[in-house]
Amino acid sequence: MVLGPLEGLGLDDEVIWLHHFSWHVGTVAVLAMVAMYALAIWHPAGAIFALIASAMSAAFAVFGISLAIFGNAALWSTPAPYPWTLIAILGFAGVLFSRGAA
Figure 1 (cartoon, helix red, strand yellow):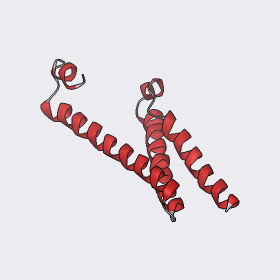
Figure 2 (cartoon, helix red, strand yellow):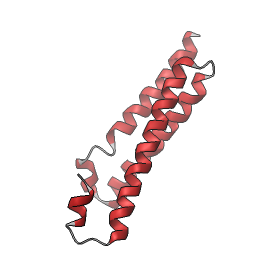
Figure 3 (cartoon, one colour):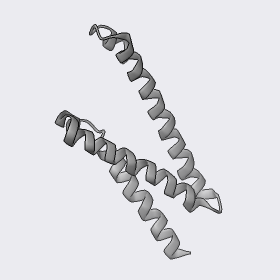
């Protein structure tokens, strides 16, 4: 769905395949975050996993917002800057509130 249209644009192979690689690295990072949030539910040291996943999300948020501000404002019209911020806030809040309940 992505490589075909990119190949039709006449872009260099390096650009197309770097996009392909980056997409899959992002997918692996998101799956790792999902696994860490799941471990946070069941593992006795779950808060550590939730903190790491939330920190990853916060870093993605900073990266997305920074690219939109300093790179190209077109990024604001994509979902890139938004969900990471929400996930980080909810993740950190979950850790904070779970510690207060313990």
